[in-house]
Length: 101
Image (cartoon, rainbow, N blue to C red; front, side, top):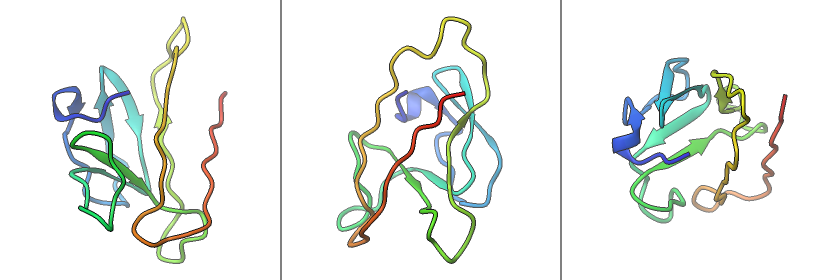
């Protein structure tokens, strides 16, 4: 999955609360609790390229935790999905969980 603008429609998701469907490389995703787009330059978002997805932590007290859910069935499987993870700014103590259905 590549978050770069040529492959993502819409190219930005500026609201954690939005339940809009985001299409990345022709695959539909729902990303509540996620900001997607131009990163906040250090000490903010970690990014690889010109885009990032910032996911709200489960322990966050300002809203529901974030997640990214693929909406399309891929009969042959997803192949490889890789994540580069880091904490936002000076935040600490978080984990990432990948759930496969």
